[in-house]
Image 1: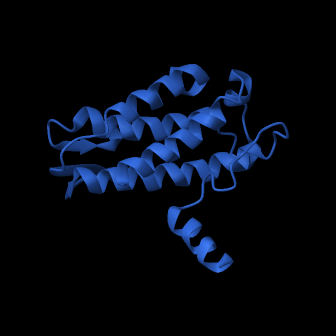
Image 2 (image 1 turned 90 degrees about the vertical axis):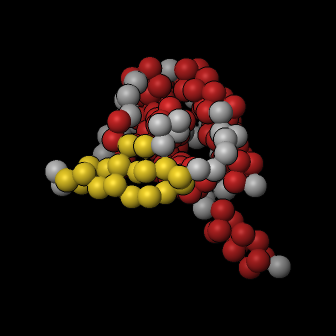
Length: 162
């Protein structure tokens, strides 16, 4: 179920990206401190890539992202990266040591692959909510009502509607 939810969320992002030009993708948004949809998309992608590329070692550091500018400047390249991520998610759960640098200190926390997938899903939705703010500047886009909305919020809204 987790993998399916990730696929659905990433598919929502791809559906949106297919509506954007590279100029839309790289346009600064004042409401996002002048960051771009491309930068937020790159951040989503690179978090998943970190987990994928560091899975075998069992040590994951999201600080070690590549920050590949192609992801944030080319809609097609970003979509290709998302499709690659979707193909690589099916792995066995295993212990993972999560490393993070905070205020000059290295923090190591025990985690596992499925927990990190869940983190990446929630992180993705959070950044999609930020992207949605930037999308308000584009009147020509079709945006799913649930884009950038937590699954628990979607479920709650369904319960309220009954």
